[in-house]
Image (cartoon, rainbow, N blue to C red):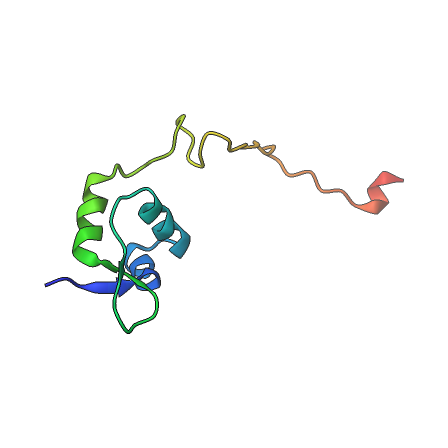
Length: 88
């Protein structure tokens, strides 16, 4: 028996943002369903669980956590604090 939930409920169960669920749907990892007489779209938790088992835990490209276009800036080890009085 299918267990249909909304996109927001699915996101809460996966501990991700609802837009992440939209991205999964957009990539075709699992289908989305419409139910007659109800508003919104639904996903089957069993299909979502199966898709999540098949996906690698980390999908970033290029070895960067945030994706290939991410820019990561290293901060100095010691914080430099600027105060107006020190500039005089």
